[in-house]
Length: 103
Image 1 (cartoon, one colour):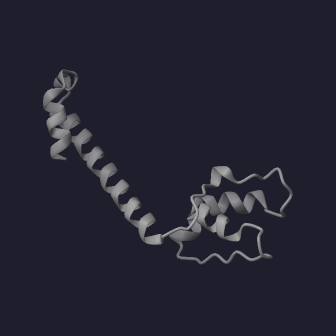
Image 2: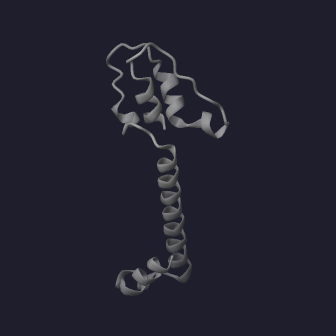
């Protein structure tokens, strides 16, 4: 928050803002920085082996993946409900990659 305050002091554009608006900007930035640090720490702790993301899932190839189910998994509601996810299938089909993408 101190960093955001210093930036506000040196920026002439922010002088026109009210006190509440400036405090709001600093609070929003602090919350975003904390979220980023928290996410970075969790990803590091998870030690995911593959750098995968859900945007790279190719649904054009028929693999039997239900698009609606995948959309629900990507939304992450199952995580907030403290549910588990079991991904099954034969060797080499991308189970670990998919788990890392949903990570």
